[in-house]
Length: 117
Image 1 (cartoon, one colour):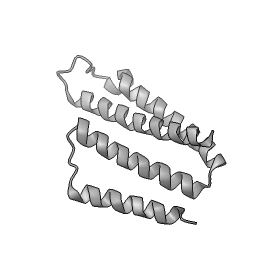
Image 2 (tube, one colour):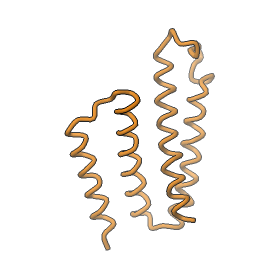
Image 3 (tube, helix red, strand yellow):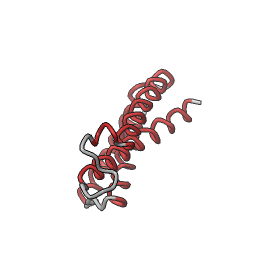
């Protein structure tokens, strides 16, 4: 059960970041049919991002009750960073340079070192 909560937390967290990014992308496009002057309060993706972010907090609260916090925090954060970096480079064409690869490698190595017993 704890690994299902773990996976759910990662998925919901990633969805929150993606929805907020979509929300801000639409907001910048004033020619979009989804644009309104009071945009943030009417934007579906803004509220979905808020809902996912809040849900991920509750999943995380359940998760740290079932796993040691140093494992839960480091693994969840590392995986979210990796997944978001990949999604951002694929869908929003954000740079995924060698420094990004090195940074992700260092984060992963750090996570492995912290979680070694």
